[in-house]
Length: 468
DNA sequence: TCGGGCTTGGG
DNA sequence: CCAAGCCCG
Image (cartoon, rainbow, N blue to C red; front, side, top):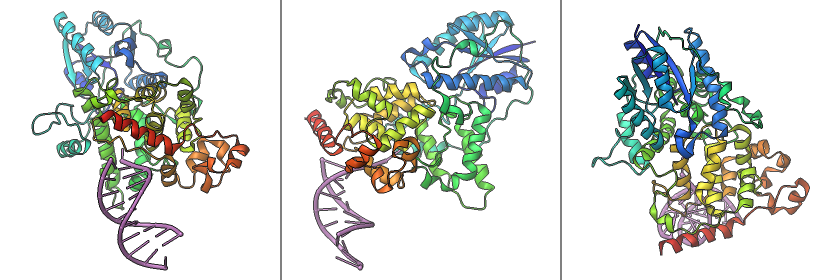
């Protein structure tokens, strides 16, 4: 009986899984393995919200394997040592995995591949959960892209409609003794603040359900609804994509199938383009691995950020800035582990421009509180908003949270939902309640942390000083 | 994946 | 008076 280990990391699914498919084809039985080794991801081990997701997603994967009379074998410790132990315990002669793209993971995986190969174990590394590998989308001069639109043009031209891989029809698992249970990994927070996370269903089945719901009632209105945070106009697939519970190829195929079955003409390109941003983040992180901590644009190394102000940061984190759309977003984040993308841009703009706090403070908070926290996307997003990023986002692109709020939450439904003390304020006042001091007195809602107009001018002045 | 200031043109 | 369009940073 030939045996192969399939080492699951952020590919917590059975369908469209190239490594699993190949292992099942090449070997009689497989050992599905997960290893808890957060320290191997350096300073970017999963944050609290992400660990909550991981806990439930591992449970879901274990359950899915149960339908094949298998279990997810869970180990803890140095990945190489655990892999060697499982090889010894099962007589496995190969290890299959899906590629990760973060710098720390790439280094680790390369070292493990060398060590296992030296042990005489076959290592098979397959595509991860991207449409194309980061080095497969390059400019004519064979350089990585730095601007989204040409990147997307190039990637889009490479995409085909090939069907995703099915779940391997016959999957025989080898049993291994001495595994840990998911609970023993202690991934859930000590003080449970995840009550509002109940709307999520981590795992492959939850991802498929989410896609179906999105396809059914949102695709048709996506282009308009995408920007309205009060509606669930976005797909909300980001955490599922991050954990590899679903792939971009599956998302595209699912949307295409649903569109084909609909009588209305529906354009899914805008949504595919959103997936393109996710792909672009991974492309940038792969080619420019320092972006999580260093300015992509070195001009920003000389920018005069304000000193880190713990009190200001705390009010931003708690959703007590006095700017309703921002506070709604920050409270949604805390309650649900997620925030609407339009609002992410607004809260990030306020922190990095009006408050002039370094983007890394925001990135760290998002890292700990987002269930979809993804190093590539988080780094891309924060640097994009801060203006220090790759895409030519001019620094003067400072969002006005009031006009944005009026535009994208016109009746204030999103604000009312997440900032309940403003629920009764009329739509004409809800975006800028400070303009009527009586409302602040009546509701107890705070005065804004900054004056939007003067802080905007200060930020622009600071930027001009940087260039000089 | 912008805002603000300005012009234009309709009321 | 105001909305829409345009330009510039």
